[in-house]
Length: 275
Length: 269
Image 1 (cartoon, rainbow over the protein chains, first blue to last red):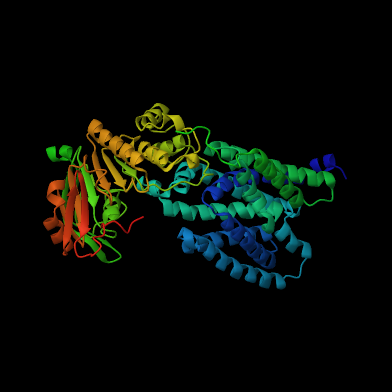
Image 2 (image 1 turned 90 degrees about the horizontal axis):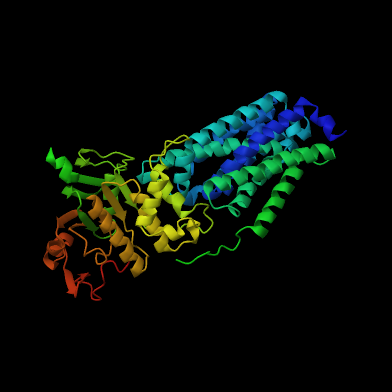
């Protein structure tokens, strides 16, 4: 079967639409993740999405709904416990370990197709039903709208929390809100690349962009562009090949862009002029 | 009525507590427009907390505070704030100009053109602190002194009536210390703004200071430098023997009981 054959199927178009939206939110959120130094929070929330997905699979045969429900729970727990920056990673590690344990327990009770379980870990956007794709698109739009609304205060609070607080920005509340935005974004991305490989969309594109641009807006634009190239490009290549999993293609493109940014970006910061 | 114009900050019988501990009590202070007040005292005396109180981030346990005739509140755009110098990460994806821009509009939600300060104002603020030549460079690549000048531009861009400074000279070289202090002083003279300047080291600001607020042991003392930086006054405030020594135009505050005559801020970095 060929690429044009797949592209004539509305299901493929839904997948590409969802991938586009996911890439946009990953590119934007990834930039904030890097500024706020929250790479481990991405990994933690995504692996905890596994637990949510396993619960959804077991209870309602709906891993996507389960993962999003789990994301809300995880964001609530982390947002209220991981208050201080210094203890954040430790708290996430503790919750992550326990949450994964529950996930393994839940999966032990699941007697359906094994591919459902591996899809959670390694992703397969083609294994997602039409209804679930619509949920994905809805969540993506919601995250995008909220992030656009809080963009400036969130950037202020992320870069310069002390002065932001003095200027009346609710730094603590934005930090909690960002946990929700992050958990939902990561869970959406996990549908394409799986919970284990989420970092390839939620971190790598922004990490590449930060090496090539110095204005916040340009970093976000580049980061979104790299995420789009990775996710949409990965899905198209996967369809064309017929055998490669989308996650493999996505992570490879995303890593290739990062290598390019390391080679040609400002990897050794030097001052252009001295003042 | 005239009080509202002459006094920017008024504290009446104010008591401030943190975690059930009283930092200071019975504080009365009227800050005039255009006045430069240095806030001195040991760590934990409630200097930074005083700034947080003025910023509306902490409540008073007792007494009252008014800012420009109104109750203190969060996000008061009449107040500018310069924090301690803390270096930004080298790869932080923002330029000096973006930092100033955030000071002007970073607290606003939504998108679009309701930015209250124009690009021309941003340029003006950057020029006023002498940062034009490096304002478009990545912030993380600038020196501490350069970053702190941009901090000053960030605080002054909205032309605040009150400027709060929390140890803005800490870990800066002498040249940068003088430059920052001078531009803060020039700003308050040009705009008749009040400056509350928290510091461990009084000497860099002494030529500009109108009054000193000295906080120690839950007590306080506010007066002109000559009336505060005296052995008898500070000994009474600390409740122990304190020596104030003047060498030319520099002032040293020493703990008289300490055999090493340790400088009272000698433990700081």
